Length: 168
Length: 190
Image (cartoon, rainbow over all chains, first blue to last red; front, side, top):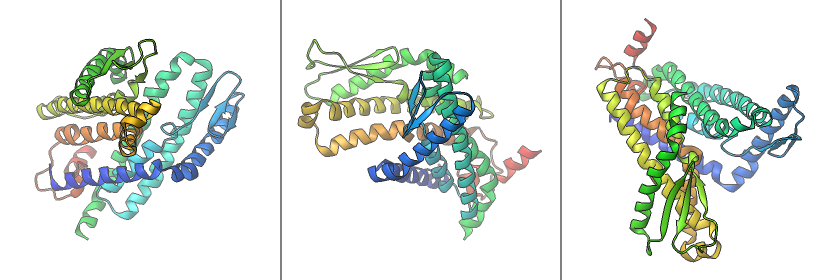
């Protein structure tokens, strides 16, 4: 393994570990993660209502007369966001490129994650048999693939910026 | 989709293998040797010699521990030159490492169950530090660790060996880190 590869690996693992500890501690969870998840739930409820579903939100719960889900960590896109940010911070690039990549990437991930929540609820209402497979495996994998895809696309563009930083 | 279908179909058999390895490792270090693990479809059942014979046996969802295989296979499938010698070897090595990590994740899940879910027995056998250690290890794996493992194995053992080789004189740290070299980007545009 080359030195740059080792650096990428060490930075990635360190950043991921640090971010994990940050979101795992109770005050951060209560003050940032849960309110953010509640916001996702409220937006999802509005989108579901636009699709004709009779839904209400209570905290992190979306409920209709026939189905309800509690959106928790793992369904709020934070895990994909942590991976993306850790990879972008670990990869050699300029600060500007990183910032642009992180902001764009997080927006894309959360946009797709909203679609995930809405589609999973819709599946739960109309195709309950398929819900668990899509919830546990399909959407989870798709979101991480999206994060990896964003990182790959970004790293192609950011590759040149890394040289300047490495020299500086 | 092929990765998903493979994982879905192979999971019951894979869980049996996983339970066998994890049980062996747990029993190698525990005294008395009481743990029995066996797979029931998509779950792994925890049995202990000292559980009351009339009580229900707890079980863990194994899908949560192993579905990163889909992510790895999907990433591998997107890799050009996957079937070249080094990349194919990297894929096999990655799958072996993923299996080892799944065994460790199952062990952590079982220990976390012992440490946090058995009331007075947990408190008597696990201190605060070990309780937190096992619970954190389990949560970390399920939350981000499984994805990070699949991504890193693909990035270092598959992608970097399958990508077109750089010119040999490239000094780009991005290329060295596993990112695209200038040469490969030029080839990609052509």
